[in-house]
Amino acid sequence: MPQDIKRFPVSHDSASHKPGRVRLARGVSPWLLPTVAATAATSLLSRRDRRWALAAAPLAVLTGGMLWFFRDPERTPGTARILSPADGVVQSIDPWPDGRTRVAIFMSPLDVHVNRAPLAGTVTSIEHVTGGFVPAFNKDSDKNERVVWHFATEVGDVELVQIAGAVARRIIPYLTVGAKVARAERIGLIRLGSRVDVYLPEGIEPAVSVGQRTVAGVTGLDHG
Image (tube, rainbow, N blue to C red):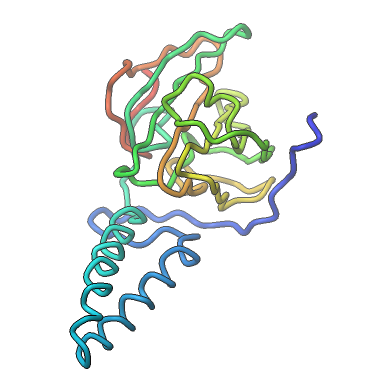
């Protein structure tokens, strides 16, 4: 195991699925709170001196954008056996030497950044691997900063990889090793998007195609 790999001591997050509700993702406070505070302060100052409006207006736009970027909508899990862990577009589907199939999903900054468990099981491993920060659509992004998950499930070991991109440089796991996870449960956040790879076990054919949009916890990745 590489020496630049470490385990995460993070807390468990229980899942709930109530369609129509939207909340903010966990782990966004360090980015959002300073922006909200600056917006509020400059807005108050602009009442005394209109010149402060020059700062208040762009800060208000930035705050609105961050609220949109860090949204975390409730989802009703799809009916497929293996579900997409991310909102985004299927970037590639590749057969792996060990018989598995890798489905890579590209997340743009406009997608929801919270990732979800592809199926129910137990978290057997969460490992952080240091690396670069090239754009996630680049083939060299396989060497980027990433968090590698393994789940013990009804179909065997399922590997999931959260990959940071050029902008997203912080991956926040919500679970710890040994946690029981439900289908479509929130497992972590990649700030400002990037890429998530799922390795389908041998013998499982993907039900998605390159270029197809996926919805985390809803879109099925297999025909089961």
